[in-house]
Structure formats: structure tokens, C-alpha cells
Amino acid sequence: MKEGCQLGESFNLYKMNKIKLSKIPKTDLDYIEIYAENLKTNPELFKQQKMLIDSQIKSSRSFFQNRFKGKDFKTEARIYLGERGLI
Image (cartoon, rainbow, N blue to C red):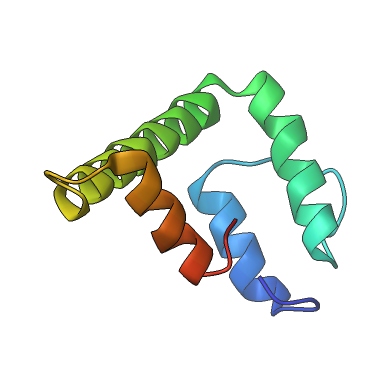
């Protein structure tokens, strides 16, 4: 999210996820702090976050397995990530 984004949009996101606002978020760090506070106490948010992370892991695994099928996985993956400046 951009610094100083539209507060109306932000409040809609918080309503959808039933996040309690302890302060009015103004920066990206404010959003992170509020979400972390709510993640500790709201099991639904924890489940949602776990599903998202598991889905990302599954997608990444599938992508790399298909991309480097039949090749030296470690070498090819390092080359691929290096070309994109990720390692």
C-alpha cells in the first residue's frame, strides 16, 4: 500500500477482515502493527494468513518443478533467481 493512501479504502479492508483499529493507520508500518496485533487475538485472521502462505508455497513449488523438470534443480533455480536480482 502506498504511504498516505485513501483512508476510506483502508477502513473497508479492515471491516471485511473484522480487524479492530487501535489507531488510525497513516503509514505502511501502522497497517502492519495493527494487523499483527489483531493476528494475535483473532483465530480467523491466523487461519486466513496460514491459507495464503500455504497457497504461495504450493504455487512456488509447482512453478519451479515445472520450469526445471529434468534439469539440475539447484543450479537452474539459482541462475533463474540471480537473473531477476533475487539472490
